[in-house]
Length: 338
Ligand code: ATP
Ligand code: MG
Image (cartoon, rainbow, N blue to C red):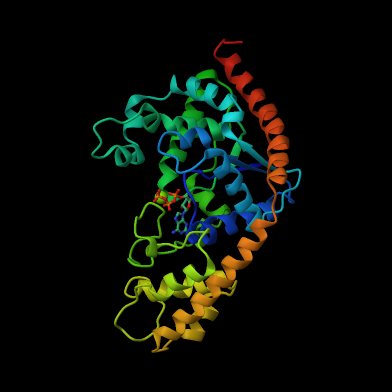
């Protein structure tokens, strides 16, 4: 029985890039694999959240993110498990134990650490050590598939290294080494994964930390506001619609959004608009599609209750503690701690 594991931080609200690139994609994969012999773990990495600032209230953000998954089409069943990381103490415990086999050298080489620490006079130890916590998050559940963005590939490699080192040290396969990045990417169909671009600077991806409000459409934006943001999106001066992310990223991004928002194959959308000279027409259509998409999403969201999410957590956290404690105990035994 293979386990798929994914986490989504709750530090701030999410944008349509998250929705179209992650939430709907994970919902589809979960619906497919949880009914096909896999366990699918969705956890809220709240201990990862506190290494940096949290906008708003963590408990409220947590409920909101789970509702986002559900409103994006995720259908929970007994093989889908939602849990909060901090409610499963084994994560912190295994993290400490793995700290004792990880080295300063390998953690210092992590690109994310270098980037997050850049230009800062002080950096908390959590930022340095969170890849080890991430390894614990994965290894406690024998997770084999861990869909992550490119920025986390290096941490996945670290997880593989730590698991291999641990097993080698004790001469038995206690920890499951997750799939190699290439296999992950294939299995999770990440190569088809989309990168929604920044509306004002379409050569970059849409990002929640970009300050300009018109660069991103948040999932809490009203459909009307979303419409306006699309209408003011940066395009180009070619005056001819073509799908070419390199030379015409703004227009290509709009085509991409249109395809995903209306659930139409991208090729069909491209065929329909190719050669169009009036960018305004395309924008109007995309603005309408995004407004409809957000409206539908927000209506679904409004119908999901806190109780529903809390009962998912209740069930998920019993399951997670059982699985994680069993693995932790094997690790503790290996080290002579039990
Ligand atoms: P930040 O600016 O703080 O890095 P972000 O908007 O890039 O925030 P992350 O929290 O870094 O969001 O990413 C969470 C997940 O969402 C990752 O798996 C990432 O690959 C995915 N993601 C982020 N932005 C986009 C986007 N524009 N299109 C598709 N997927 C995205
Ligand atoms: Mg990011």
